[in-house]
Length: 391
Image (cartoon, rainbow, N blue to C red; front, side, top):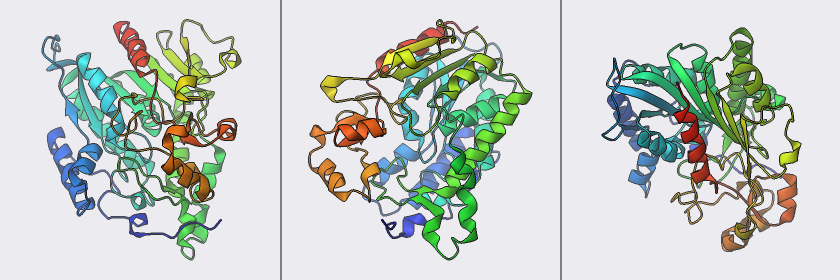
């Protein structure tokens, strides 16, 4: 089927293609991005809601936690969202870290939060600059710097940790440590996309989600692949000797979860921990240290949940946008090739299965891609145990 036509949102906005922090204090960085997002979404019906969800933010720990020895706070964490995503996805993790005494900062990656066309020309180096800025600002206020990231944000967090000795640990969710080699050729479109602009896109979708792009550029895939290649080279040169917490779905259709085991066995110290959501625990490596691995059931028949998903790790069931009763449902895998199923999803969402968009799950019936973690409360317990064991 031919791709849907391109629209204005599929062009660069001219507002967010590169890092815009410079030497700003963090509060001014947040304010600059808020103003930029207000311009990008001017005229939108839910302007304040859209701007609030896409704007980077910061949190201070509540009273009662010991201050740092040399800085105002003992611990701080920088949270980085994933590809095509926004800081909205980091809100519940941010609240968890705040409750555990962390100073929290989040960033907005260049190309994100505005419109999908801003990912046409962005480079991963601009994303890395943004994370470096956030880590630098956090280090000004805390004795111990931690990085947390989702998907590509996790990749960027690992990459920065290899360049910054101040980083004391990592929290990685659905980490994009390796993606398909097909992404390496994603920018070959440049040979002919001047003639066929739609060739610059992997997917052209309705973009109904106000906190995450649904349309997806080939350049975004190519940049992520280049980042993972560079990270692989860095990991061969430098051992990662800080504790790492990882949570991921075994059924992930976006990134290669199997790489996590090699990464954790060879690159991380014994204090690292891995949480895997799975339907088939018997398939996991028997040589992986049992005290490092927590296998969690990802099937909930009563809720018609068939498995976990790449998109289902960092948000709880009660999330107002993506949760059980959330205002957004993800059926984009049916658009535009199967508009009959796409329409059926919109009409009777309560009848749908949920899970990752695997071939097996799609055969079960009408499927929504799962956007929340039914085990989020247990995930917080696992993270709490990991934090309690930090030096």
